[in-house]
Length: 99
Image (cartoon, rainbow, N blue to C red; front, top):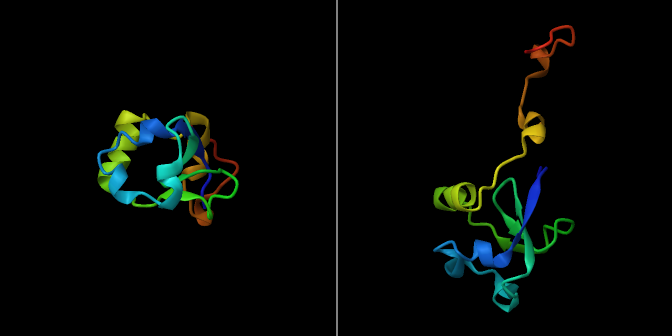
């Protein structure tokens, strides 16, 4: 389940060397200043609300992830990282406070 996305002008994502090789249909029609959304799973959509229908990029490779993290500086905000941590239910103890 996707939890976080960040908006970018399409021109920034088009800097990725393999972007043109992975065009999804209507991408070529979009202007460079079109705002698109990069999700936490490294997919790109035109709308953060109807993301299943508006996929622009689904080819999540190590190169793409590195581009997003290093060039776009995409990362989860500090205050949301806790929601991505998976803890087994058996480890949960509300009386224990982690520091």
